[in-house]
View 1 (cartoon, one colour):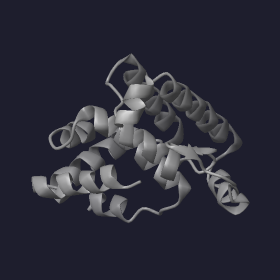
View 2: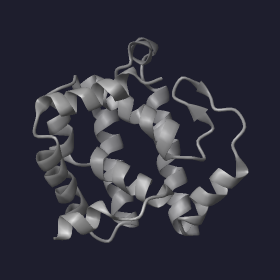
View 3: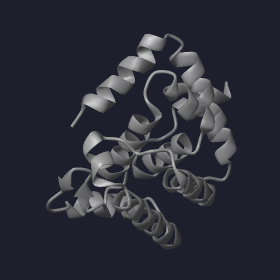
View 4: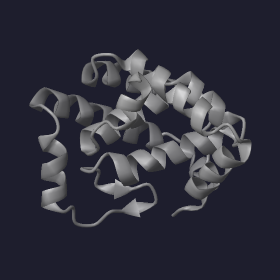
Length: 169
């Protein structure tokens, strides 16, 4: 089964970035999450996820400075991408950080990213970057939607997963 093959896909920095971008740019995934969590909380925590776990070369966590980057982690991250892809990732990351800086301080303190043009442009840019990194991004988005439908049928499972993410610091 094709879905099973995708589930067993290799992990690593490239897979983490591609899955994140696919999730972020998938209306089906975001809609599924909106059933159990506030959209502004979801958006803010997806931003935290990008900074804290997905984009290894980021210099700052969402709530402060990361400190010294481990050279081997950055090297492993960069090795998973071509030079051109790394430039595209760096541009996206700068765009991402700029959008976060444009958030009002009160929204950042409250852990909310309003679904304004700032957010919609970030999602649109994620979609473009995903198209550069993956030969069939729509197939991946469909797989993620299938996965959510198949694996997270019980509302409590998705709600618990989001609560764990929202409560993690």
